[in-house]
Length: 129
Image (cartoon, rainbow, N blue to C red; front, side, top):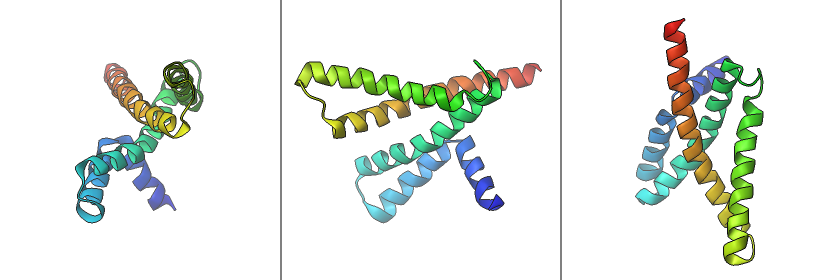
């Protein structure tokens, strides 16, 4: 079990690794469609980004220790509410399948930006300490 935990920790620490691995596996072994491979890689890497951002937020203790999960859930709730409202204005109804896909993909983009900022700040704090 500790081997599995160590492998997961290594993969979640550098989320670009699972993205590349998943892309290559899907592209070469499952489907030769590059767009499909990128979609799979984005969807699965989002899970690793969620855990990596939770850990980084919890290490800083901002605004308090243990708030990482809450802040990531809040990010997804804001994205869901905002996109559902925009979809309601444009189409008159919420299409849940499209909304879920859009929230997950925008969540990926938001989590990548958050990860880069938190990683740089964490690296700076560590080097200056």
